Length: 258
Image 1 (tube, rainbow, N blue to C red):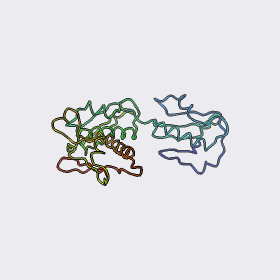
Image 2: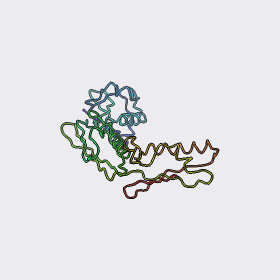
Image 3: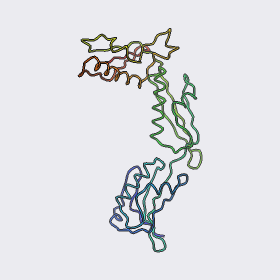
C-alpha cells in the first residue's frame, strides 16, 4: 500500500510541497481514525467527493472537520491500493472527559460551582469550552462578592483517550459595594441615573436577604445601558456613559460611572 500525503492540519493547514502539484482522481472518500464520532455524520459535513481532487475543497473540509471540536488532528491523504486511489481524512479524536473535580472552593459549595461551570463529563476535551466554563464560574464568584476570584484547570490522563479535569479556584477577598457614583453631570442629579439601575450598595439590614450589594459584572454592564437610555429619555441625545470604573479599597468596591 502506497500513501501520498498532501495536506496536514494540526491547529493550522500545511502542505507537502513536493506532492501538492500532483493531480489525483479518487474512487471514493473515507474517514479513518474515528472511534466515538460516527463516520457517516462526518462524511455528510465535507464537500470532497469521488473524482478529481479539488485541493481547495480538501483544505476547507479539513477546517470543517477540525471546527467540529472533536479532533486534535486532521490529516488528508491519498491512499493507493489495488490500483485505485482513495481520499482519506485521517483524524485523531480529542480525549473524552471522564470526571470533573473542583478544589480551592472554601466559601462556595462544589455543587453550586458545578452548576455555574455547566461543564459535563462524557464530552470531548475542548479548551475553549473549558475556558468558557471557568469564565461563568468566575462571574458567579464575582456576584457573591469575590471580585478577584480566578480559576485554572489541570488535565490528567486516566485511561485510553480519557482524562479527568480538576478546576482550581483561587477565591481571594470577599468585597461589598460601598459606593456608586456618577461623574460629569451638569444638568441632572446623580440619583436621576442611579435610581433606575439594579446594582446597589451593600446594606447590612437587607442585602443578606435580597442578595444585593455584591458585584455582578453582567448586571453592571446592563446598568450602563440603562443609564444611556435614561439620558436619551431625558433628551440628552449625544450623552455617553463609559465603562464603569471599579476601585478596591478596604474590602470594599467603589463604582464610578463617567
